Amino acid sequence: MNITRGFTGRPRVDHPGLPPGQYDAGDDWPVLSAEVTPELTPADWTLRIDGLVAEPRTWTWDEAHAFPDSAYEGDIHCVTGWSKFGVRFGGVSLDAFLDVVRPHVSATHVVAYAHTGYTTSLPLADVTGGRAWIAWEYDGRPLPAEHGGPARLLVPHLYFWKSAKWIAGLRLLDHDEPGFWEGNGYHARGNPWEEQRYSGD
Ligand SMILES: Nc1nc2c(c(=O)[nH]1)N[C@H]1C(S)=C(S)[C@@H](COP(=O)(O)O)O[C@H]1N2
Ligand SMILES: [Mo]
Image (tube, rainbow, N blue to C red):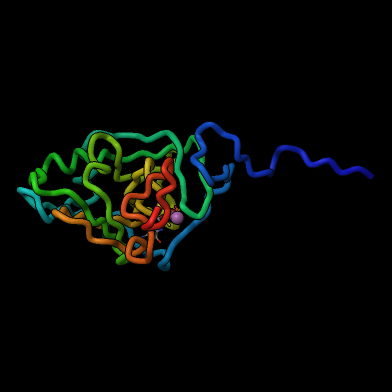
């Protein structure tokens, strides 16, 4: 008997939206967590932005939802190799929060930190200009806990380790302060199109 393998189930590596060295995970959405998924409810969740800002501030769940809705529809790319096409997240643009705290001109970087202690560092320019979200919906439903619900940071144009799950806050700094993966040899920026996986890339 002849068994012919179809195209389904095969990792696609020829998609025009696929950055170098990545494959299409299809309908799978792997869970990558360094921590145990926390039991965090919307009532417990807060977001704080401080550091080099004019007015440090903490928002509750309801206060954060008072900002205009903003959605991301597009792709995500994990440094372990999988990419996912056409995902839909809902939440609020990070710009809405930053407009309130007013970053100081000297601020160049942020450290994003989770309610669990996970941290990741990013250039400030990568989380402004409509390129970063606080996301609490996936596909029109509440973001599942294992994927960072009730809310996660979403910075889809960078490798997905920058998108801190269970986001608790951002601190604005005038220098790069490596987070969890950056301190373990991963790249300070993490642009998938330039394959910035490790610090030397
Ligand atoms: N708090 C927290 N956020 C995190 C991580 C983590 O371990 N803890 N892993 C990062 C990595 S490496 C990736 S690829 C994505 C995975 O998100 P997912 O589990 O929803 O796919 O979350 C990122 N954010
Ligand atoms: Mo990742």
